Image 1: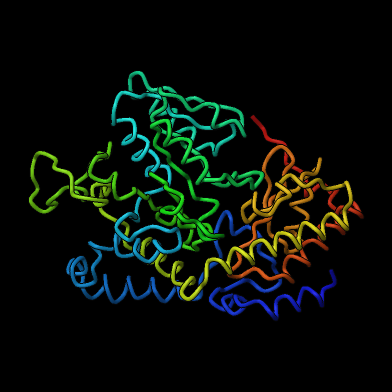
Image 2: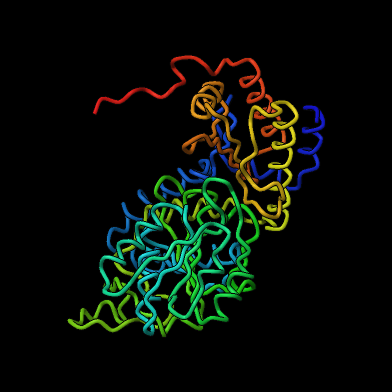
Length: 407
């Protein structure tokens, strides 16, 4: 593909104008939105309004006057259509890890099954949370099976199957519907981490019969560093599950200040402490960048961008950079991974050229494509830059290699 052909694709792109909703630094191609989304143009004004007008003028009255108290559910209702959930099945707040703890704990508190099933190589924080519950609760055990064999690990001892929909390294994408069906047939609840999927392609929690899910707000949803996360509990499960982290905001009547806890009805019982209003305000601005976006068109563009990049890298680099993501577009998320024996140095050299991706040990270079603001020209230019570095060996300079550490 030529540069002009890439520009022709951009000219016909129905999502091209959404790029104007972001403040992107000139001279940089940002392909790390799968780690931290770009800054929406509206975020600074939204935060300024929250700080100066709402907080500054209303003070404590802001909880009612500006509906701060209802922000976790109100903003969740804006996110719900993007993940195929009903508004009363989502809640905004806390971090992905805390939400994962809540939902794993809730699943383990039902019945007498005590096994958390996952796959080896799942995202480390997810494994750490599960290990924490394993240490905390008598009889609970974490069972890890090799990637691709998750269905073989399902049996009558499993309480909950925990998976990340898109692998954070390779970009491999699980078939949620098929896995949910197999788990449910064995009486197993499923808990999905959507951190590397939601906001990048079509996610349909209801259609795929998901039970529980968590996801973050700072990647494809552009909510800013450390943005609040979200959790999903299917409506039919809400009143039968109890949060292992009950707090006053999840009480049936928070301002009664009862000494004894009584859980709220529905999704609200998974609230814990006071919501972070500044964080939720920034996330709300991030979610607004999706206003008017057709998620099917978003997924189509994601595949188009990643396929262009793969084709160009393989054409230019030959065997010097090996594709480490699934070749089938339907089997991967919105980031593409190439392996190179000196991947760290190559990525540092790319970043020095203004092409921002990231690296995962031991040799993986990740390139994330955010369809709202990345273009086909971005993908083409990034592939050309990578090819030039690999072919010329200009990455092999001292400043691009890992610095030794004094221990």
